[in-house]
Image (tube, rainbow, N blue to C red; front, side, top):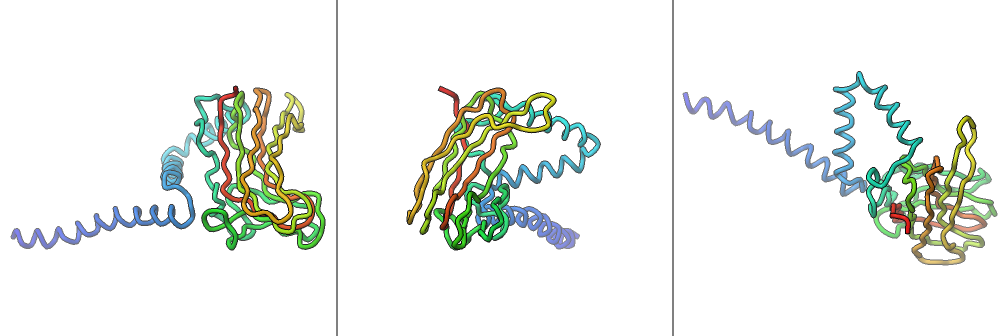
Length: 242
């Protein structure tokens, strides 16, 4: 009788082991291959589970999230000295899209793409090629989900240029929206030092103070002129004002 029980228990134990190890293998592979920290995967899975069990309150949660974005965050809400870009290595995406970023340009024949052949670190970079024409501006941008009001944001990244008769740069733009007004206005703007000509990977930095009246923070990597530029290893950190 004991032998029968032991034989019946073996399949159950194997099923339990597989149920534990397969998700762990998936998480490890996801972190190594695409560059998303496993803690982000856990967080995403946790949010999905909460949505399934607490869907009755989803409307209230969305309203609270929108309200938080409008009012911004204090020091205790946003970690200081931590990179706020989840896809800072630009590893996650396709040639046409980079997760978390939006491409822009005049649409005159330039190419704004994710280049998996050129990278400062990792497997890919954000790239702009004017394809022989001169353009006013093209690149990639992101609007921050959280506003680090009354703090300084520091935007850094590595920039590479090839035959660039123009400039490549990092930019941070602050916007404000008056109560009752439907349009946003530029509150302040800051640029990094530029890169031009034929230049290997060069670190560039731009910082700006975000005042309490700011209602939006935009970060951008861009090219103006004619040539090619690449951007990689981007970081955005929040610091206490001096």
